[in-house]
Amino acid sequence: MKNLLFIFTISLLFIGCSIKKEIISPLIEVKKDKKIEDVNLEVIKEKKVVQREIKDEFTTIENMDIDLNVKKIAIIFPSNKIGRYANSTINTVNAFLIHNNEAFQLETFDTYTENYRSIITQLGLLKQKGFTKVIAMFTKDGFDILNNLDGIENIDFYFPLINKEEVLRYENNFIFGGISYKEQLNLLKHLSNHKNTMFYIKSYLGDKLRKNYQQTFANPGVIKEIERANNRYKYIMNDGRIKGSTVILNTPIVKSSIILSQLTAFDVYPYRVLSTQLNYDPLLIKLTQARDRDNLFVVSSISEIDNFIEEYTKLLGSNVTYEWVDYSTLLGVNYFINENNSELIKTKIIENQVDYEQKLYKGTIYGFEEVFSN
Image 1 (cartoon, rainbow, N blue to C red):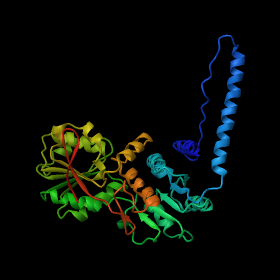
Image 2: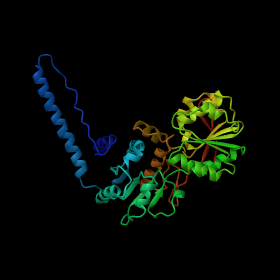
Image 3: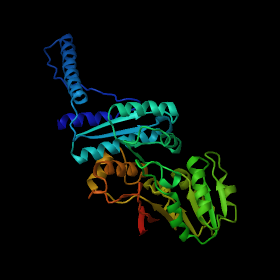
């Protein structure tokens, strides 16, 4: 049974729009005295045997009467909107369930988009198959649709991308795993000298961070939009207001690394450089020089977890150490299985929201060094 579940689990790693099974035939020893036609015939026969055996195994798994103790988890997501998160989310859930060492059933439901019809269609299939624990990889648009539906009171939904502070109302069976950029910015503002400059990229997240920043910092100061391409950094850095100010980076890692290097290149020395979760990633260290990161402080909501789970998730293709969406997903599936009683993952869910700990890191020559946590 364990082997069957492992085969079933690994096959899920290749989920796109549906589960695809790839069967690799075993190596066949070819004897020199055999004709090539005979060898090809043996290969074909061997492939058919292997395909039939594996097909029978999957049929047994899919059609067997599911034991009441089997953990059933569904993942529903709009691939056209959060495509880059889909695979790592599936890998994270797989890794945890395998580590949990209990029989489980995991299935994905792709809505492609976040429109009403596609969501209720996949939700109907999900309900027919009896899933009551669902990781919903929706943005606020998809959440608003679910929040106005009837007939889902008996399904627990976990939203890794949404924080409770972003919604006006919610159902009791809705649990939120999104980090709070407001809390992160609130921690960072205490490091400011009250002369501020913020860089951001215009996008859904960029606009959200800009608004949160303006609401959190008493003196927002200079706000500079960074284009996705063709930025005139010499012109940007010649703004005298940046010198000696606290620079806040609400930009992705690559853009942040360019800004840091340009500050150094044009001898613009800020008081401090601050960043939210966006730049808590070792890639930033690789893309910048040590002097670029002088006085760089980054806040993160990711806490330490069991080493074995950390390594196992990496093995299966996700990164719960630095990718907050993967970490949030891990917290969600852990809660579905263990509620708040896990000894391996200390972060709890309180009043339908993950209770994140905010940690402050300073950039060093080798990476990030923790300097404060609350």
